Each structure stands twice: as C-alpha cells, then as structure tokens.
Image (cartoon, rainbow, N blue to C red; front, top):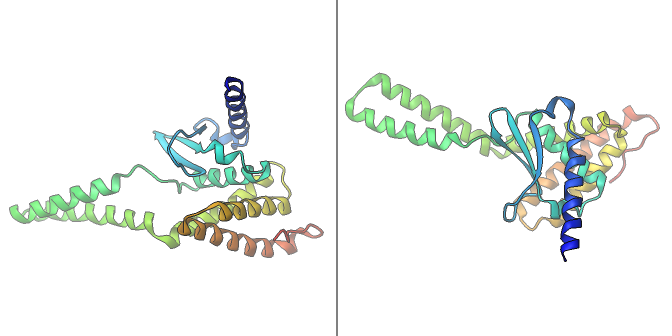
Length: 214
C-alpha cells in the first residue's frame, strides 16, 4: 500500500514537472503548476495567489485519465486564459458593491451630493464588473479565444496544426462524456462546435495536411 502511494506521488510530481516545461518562457517566473487538494475540484483551473503570481491547479486523479496530447492542449488552454487575462480575479466586486450601496443610502440621509455621486459611481463600476464576469456570451467568447490560442501554443511547442486540432477536439469530447452537469457539458459542446468551425476554416491553409478529426 505504501509502495503504491509512493509510486502514485512520484508519478504526480513527474507530471507536474513535465507541465511546467510546457509553460512559455515568459510565464515561467510567475506561473506555477500544482495538484489541487480541494474537494470535487474542476479538472484544471487557475487562481491568483499573490501580486503578479498565478497558480494552475489540477485534479491529478481526473487528469491522469486523459491521453498525453489531450492533457497538453487542455493545459495550453489554461495558459492561454492566463495570457488573455481572463482567469477569475479576487472577488472585490461584491464587497465594493455593498460598500457603494451602503454609502449611497447613508449619503441620502446626510444629503452630501458629492459623496453620493462617488458611492453611486462605485456601485456602477462594481456592478459592471460583476455583469461582465457572469455574462454567458462573454465567458464563451473568452473560452473559444483561449482554445484558438491553445492551438497556436501547441504549434509553438512542435505540434502540427492538424494534430493540435485533433488533440483538443478529442479532449473536449472526453470532457463532454464525463460531465454530469448540463451547464458545464453545454460549455464543452459549444467549445467543440467552435473548434470544428475553426478547423474547417483552417483546412485550405494546410495544403496536404488534414484536420478532419471529427
């Protein structure tokens, strides 16, 4: 039992080290890769852990069920989200909204026009940020753009364009099959549909290469 646990831990550390080598050089000094210890975590996600520092967190149990090329493309998708600055930030918006609303109500009582305007402005900014974070259309746009950038990153690391599309497409298919939650499954399906369209557009550019992996 101890031997199995030790072997599993070594395999996880080896995979994490391998993934760190897949970070573009410009990210290696401020992006780390770790296995998550959270309960029922997402397969892969990113989180700001300090000023100018981001940690990619991976559920290693689920991760190791994927083929190597599938892991690589899903990892580069997450890297692309970091590069595009679309990972979740510190949740200051709700606190700011509460402060703004409280300030607005307070200023109505004391009738200070300038402070009321400042409180309403704070409400407006924080409310706009919350809407952006939860807007489904924007979220999907960000995910699709990250997929496109993941394809480019794969090529940067030696993948052919057809193989990059194939690897990401097959990974999304696996995630669709393994996702019990309808909302999450719908996101994967939308990403796969967008990827198919992107692959179709890329076909003429690849001469004798084929991207009909679907």
